[in-house]
Image (tube, rainbow, N blue to C red; front, side, top):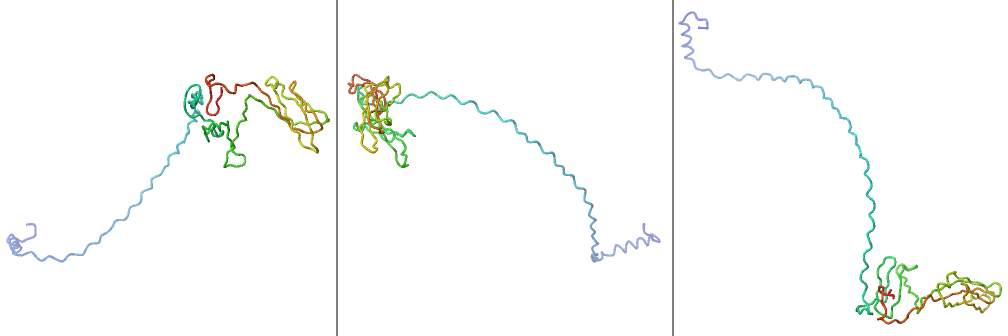
Length: 239
């Protein structure tokens, strides 16, 4: 008996009293006790931010230049020539007229007409950008050469015209043509033969143009096809 009872009978009475009593009603809920938030702790020190050292940017040395230029390759073989009627018996068109732009190498015109067998060359027109300028070779039945110039008689007798010192070794059968230039009157001029690579023009005081033609060597103008071997391409055929 932990509580203070006078005797055991009191203790038993108390137990009987307690046993006979029912549970009392639930009492009202007590007020909510105050909720307290503890104080905010101190902010810790900021950590130090350390930037590492900047790395070095190194560029390696420049490499050597490329190797030496390779040698130029050998020239390729010449393409096949167009066939032509002749001693070989080959058949096919012959290009008697061939116009080529010498600045680009492009063929401008080809012809198989024997009446147009001119040896031409083509250049840009000197005054019209929309046109070409076409010139042809002067032809003749000899391997000819020419020299030309301008002279003047000042002594009312003659003047000597000197040609290159190799002329008589290069050609023969020379002809001289004199064309007087009109001044105050019409004059008549005459020339000598060519001797020692020079000639004289006789007449009154006057100015004139002169032209000398010569023959380097004779050629066979009408050879038999069976007796020759024709070489070349297009209009540029030769024996």
